[in-house]
Each structure stands twice: as C-alpha cells, then as structure tokens.
Amino acid sequence: MPRPLRIAIDAFWRFNDDDGWAIASHIALSGLMALFPFMIFVTALAAFFGSKELADNTAQILLETWPKEVAGPIAEEIRDVLTNVRTDALTFGIVLAVYFSSSGIESLRIGLNRAYDVGEQRYFWWLRLESIGYVMVGAAGLLALSFLIVLWPLMWQTAVLFVPALEPFRGVAAFVRYATASSVLVVALIVVHMWLPAGKRTLSEVAPGIIVTLVLWLIAGAAFGYYLGRFSYNYVTTYAGLASFMIAVVFLYTTASIFLYGGELNAAIKDERYAPAISKVPRKTKRRKKN
Image (spheres, rainbow, N blue to C red):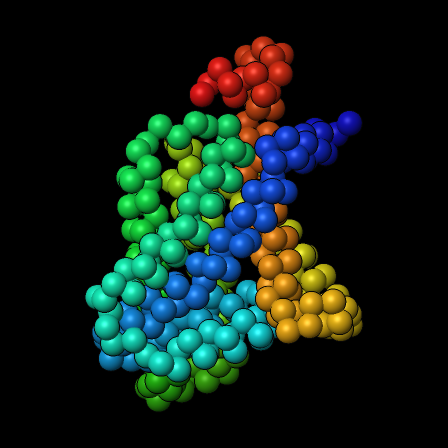
C-alpha cells in the first residue's frame, strides 16, 4: 500500500478510535451556540468605537467561506442580532457572551488533545482564561480587518486618482479584498493547531493537516452547497421551521469532522516518521500510560 494512502487510512481509524464523530457533533453545537454571543460581543466592541458597520463587515468575513445556502439564513439571524447595537460593552450580559463564546474554543481544544494524544496538565481556570483571550483577540482582529474592508474602496479610489495606471487592476484588488476571509481562516487554523492543545508543535508538523483540512473544506462546501441547491426541500419537509438551524448544524458537523481529521493526520504522520523508535504497543495503551 502506498505510504500516503496508508497514513490517510490510519488517520481515519485514529479519528474513529478517538470518538471523533461524537466530538465533532459537540464542536458543531458549541460553535453554533458560540457564534451569536461572539457577534454580540463584536457588536458591543464596534459600538464602543462608534461604528455598527464594522460589526456588519465582521459577520460578512466570518461567513464568507460558507456556502451561500448555509450562510444566507444564518446571516439573516445575525443581522437581527445586530439591528440593536449594544452600547453597554462592559455589562454583565457582554461578560456572559464572552464566556459562552469561549466554550466553542474549549470544544476545539478537547478535540485536538484527543487527536494529538496529549493529556491536559494545565488548570481548568487557566484554560478558560486562555480561551477568553482567544475570543477577545479574535474579535479585535476581525474588527481591524473589517475596518480595512470598509476603507478599502476609498483607499483604492485615492490610489487610482494619483496613479491612473492602477485602474485595470481593479478586479485583482477586489479579489484581494475577498481573499481576506481565506487568510483569516488559514491563520486561525495555524494558531489553533500549534498553541491551543497541550504540548508543543512546529509549523512543519501541523502544515499537512491544515492543508488537507482546507482542501476537504472546499470540496465539502461545494458538495454541500450543490446538495442544498437541489434538495433543500428535504430539510424543510423534515424539520419545518428548524430547517435553517439543522442545515447549519449539519454543515458545522461536517467541517468539524474534517478539522479533527486534520489533527489526526498530523499525528499519524508523526507516528509514521518515528515508527522505528516506537514499540508495537496498542495505541490505547500508550495513551493510558502517557496520561
């Protein structure tokens, strides 16, 4: 059997042994529950700077990489949340929104700890503070990118005014603008794989899983969008008013499964690389000894 195929199959069985399907459902539900509190916090932060448009653009960046059939209904619900701009950025409600948003980060940590076969030694309160820090840094970073998107048309018009030769490249500039969402996604994957779970990993160790995750996300997103475009009535007839919610859950479940598989693939590659130095002890036994 070719080595890449053997590693890919081994990663799948690792995913199955680590209860990947169950953890993926946990990540999907936690992510959906964390999305709206996160947007409430972003809205409050944007209102603090006096710009509701920043929050709108942040939602656009978050959903830019989702299939339009999935992003459309969720965007409408988020827009309903954003119609009432929160000016009480430091109230107890916003504190709760940050806390619930951090639960989505914690679900990713649990999944990656399983994937990389590492035991968590840090205190739970420290992990929660770290997750809250990720939420706040992520919100600030997305707002900064949103600010650039808001200013981009004005910046481009000014540049063309002084350098008319740039006019033919307007289409390229628009592509760069919308490629921002993809850049955010790549950076987020790198940060999550390298620093969120216990232990230390290098960029070269996490790169294969990240690349495979991105490729599979593109394929799954296109396939899911194609399916919904032709058979979305199945969800409507089955779940009635909950159809939009279930579509989002199924999509997030699929992306979470691929995300966890990326971590398992990195672990499988590492095991393959150091296979001569590892005794043939069953993998479950190894984890028990390690923990």
